[in-house]
Length: 174
Image (cartoon, rainbow, N blue to C red; front, top):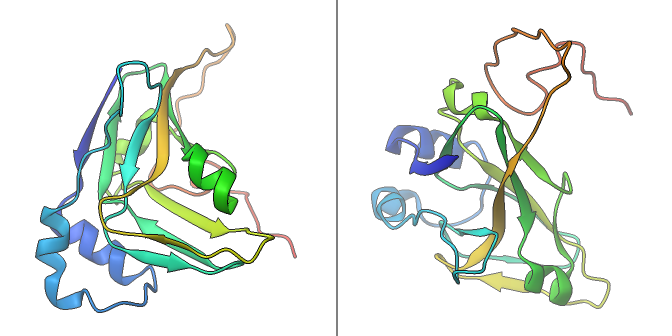
């Protein structure tokens, strides 16, 4: 149904630098890229594949970060990847994905950005708790999910991009 891969070094660097991440990793980009781990399950009974942070970060209450994971996923037709925050981080810190659940479609793999999976997470703590993660810590889980289409579906559009790329009429409302 699917397979995780790393995006190219060039794609990761481009995405990282466009994410406005405040840190000192610029001189160690190759080391950071080389240490990116493919998502994996923790136990034989785990449904979710844990995405690991490619770098360490701290989020204070109300803060948000856009994380270029360095990962892409090749999916069989009829499958999508659902991305969710790891349960423990949600329970302890109210760490959440800004779009509530990330939907990675099978044709995203072929986009110009190599199907690079991003996660935008917010620490929504209402108890003043900061959350700190080290490089390699799990922060998001992803589940392979089958889907169906209607008998009358005849869509043949082609994607190139993410975040609204399948709806040319999509506009942001104030």
